[in-house]
Image (cartoon, rainbow, N blue to C red; front, side, top):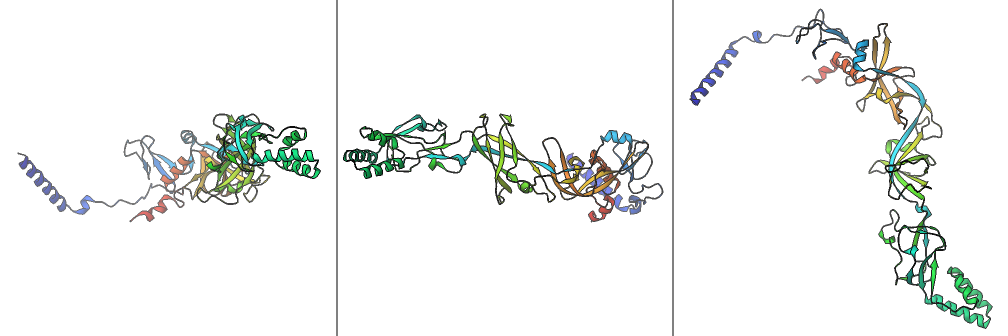
Length: 435
């Protein structure tokens, strides 16, 4: 049964092919008649108000039968403007001020680093609170460690002997030695009749917060004194930095690398604390070259945080207000340029255009014309200003579409007139795509 059905189907298909082959070609294919009377002029099309249909001539919609209405590229009635949400802005002249945004993490300012060292060799026999934990606040004069030093013990004995012999030259030389060791109180005690001691307390001559390794120093520096350790003269025992003085390293993209200069003030914010208006930060160093791997310029910010709102390791958002001079480099005073709102610019990345108002009719109709643009850098600020510098294509006072510009451009593409993607019009570009 199945086999007979397949045979019947195959026979029917063969008969159909033979029938089509015998019909003259003129009967099946008719050349399209060229547009003649009633055809659309350049820039005009007819659109169905109900269906998504665009025609080249007036008449009824072939889909629903409704009367089609004429659409002229770049011309919008008041009703069309409302439906498309058209909004206009005026091209202005203004100062070239941009906000550069960058991110970095807070670290201690290594410029404030102070290192506590013994001036004489010995062995650590006791640690005081200043040497127990990183993050400890140390005041100048606070004890750090007790050090056993045979050399110091012997020098005290020599001083006591020189006193008995009234050897002024030896006494003077020994006092100079104790002064170099920062241990003059031990010598004064012997001068007052005290007995020599074999260990002494080493105090910090600096104030600060105890840190281990700073950024980039590695683990070799990340250690505190340990009881029983033999130390040589000038061996680092404790590392102190200012507790409220910080540094932030940020990277600014290459396109804005020339918008920076030393001394620029910087506004900071953090995720957990929000805006930090009381934290004063400035650019103190700019890298003389770009980082080739990430195409950015390294910038160092130094700041003080008197209210203790920042922690080392906090992520901060740095905003730098850059004023641009006539050469579009950082300047003390911003130069004036022609500015167009960013929302008015349509771009392919290479070609930039805007739709400019070219005429107004008494019935509310607007006519637009395509304005190819040569643009400078984009300027953004925290106050919502977002504009491009215009080198050519627009002048102050021109009105441009800032909302609905894509719809105006799409209308021009459908009508075959010049648009963003087709500088000479879609109709002129068509032959280049035929094969």
